[in-house]
Length: 433
Image (tube, rainbow, N blue to C red; front, side):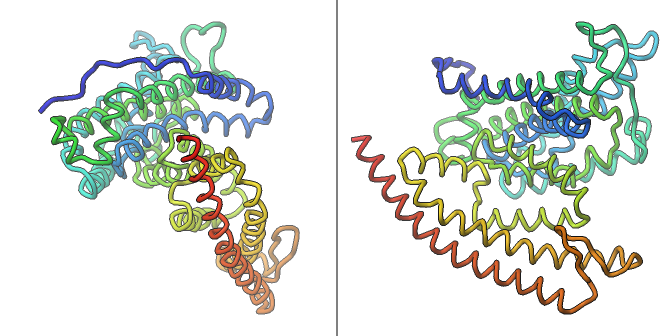
């Protein structure tokens, strides 16, 4: 069987694409100047390396159709190797690795592990591939407690990112300097992964996802294509893991290599939109907002995430990115304005339903977890009496009314969307002719 050719033709300069990448770079540079609090800077740093991790995961899921439940293995191994590299460099006589190259060391660790485990994993595809990754993820998570010298046991391994000579006058002690290091890697890695989509290997990976039988028929090895893509994804995942280790200066097995962490990458990559390159970027932003802000607002944040995932699967399986692209296409052909009233009705219905449903969830959590402080619950500027049936009836009625309004608005929206879509198709066919 033949493998993928290394010949690659560079695409001509695209002005629109150049503008988009320039705006992306500008956003990375300007973001900490607009959001100046320490919390915002910490969140921006997390978004930076999570963009790399989610994009690397989408290389498997979106581009290759490989559903993986063990992607955290490669980010976690990158984090642990990065921590060990920093600790070794800080010791006298130790092997010195400059801090700016520590993420590369993490990437090489992710690549090495992907070479080893991917050889077994990519022998199968589809559901079998997913089950193998799940088993490998559980295996590595269990091994983390068996080798405390490397993984640090339950307490993990700590480090100090300030060591050695300064880099261009920076010692990377302040969080601002760490952020710009993460932003630089984020931009470079995002650009490299986007370039990968245009290579013969990237194109063939899409073909393996869509029609593996035809790929085999024309003489390519689908397993080799999956294996090479798996290795590349492991490298970028390791880079993201190395940046995470630099950012937090501590790595624990529970937070780095667990299947729960892999599930988080899957969940938010899907919510962002796995079928579009920029979808995982949206997913990374949502992941940080949910894990940092939403978790501070409510103890039921995981429940809300699960419900949001179910709703997206039912009504927008392409993720947020697909909604953005579809509406941009409608706007391009002048068909978005008639849909705006329907969007307003849907939004109003969602607000009403969420207000009622969230009130019931919060009261239930309050009675189960905070009953000792009394039945009173602060909710959206109001004080709810969680032990009164009338409060539950009011919240339930609000939820039912919002759900009914949503279904009514959804049906009207679908009819209006079909009319607009038909008009857009006619216009596009006329323009093509």
